[in-house]
Image (tube, rainbow, N blue to C red; front, side, top):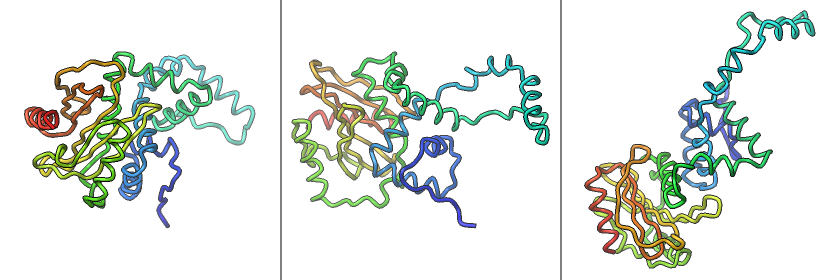
Length: 263
């Protein structure tokens, strides 16, 4: 039998199955390739990941109070020839709950409010780093396996980002020791533009230098944090927020960030 191969457009259910590691190796590889090439698809996946709420716990009380025996008897009365098994409720997978919840929110026009509510504990200046971390958590060394690494192409990509953000980004200024530049591109989350400059560190894997406009924000010195088990260094300068994120040790990340700040 031919194995099912997911093809664009990918459903929310398929994306949640990816998050739950319920796809076959081949399916996961195919979807992973598409995620590395399609920022909008990756943003959908990040949104679904943010929607990983404790649905089971939330509905447990309702399920306990449900008159299962009476409902089962009523259904059997409607179709006596096909009684429900005694086990009745077998549970609903997280995949179905999240996909259904997101679909309902989209129909009701509430997705934006849920998205904002999930990040209530963070300021807008902080929240963008969470979005980047969600995106970066999808990257593995294999993500960059077939990436073209033409110097001319990377130069054009940096020029596009420079024009979009009003900065001057030259390869010599953003080169990082021990890491190979792979690509530079613009992402958007809602109306927020985020520049992503991605590297592959020879020892620690995917690494990214990301930039977004900082409207009205003053300069802020470098600070460190951990997101999604990755080390982050972030700062604000020249009316932009900057962050460096990767699996490198914290001290090494601070040294790399210092190099980027020095330009």
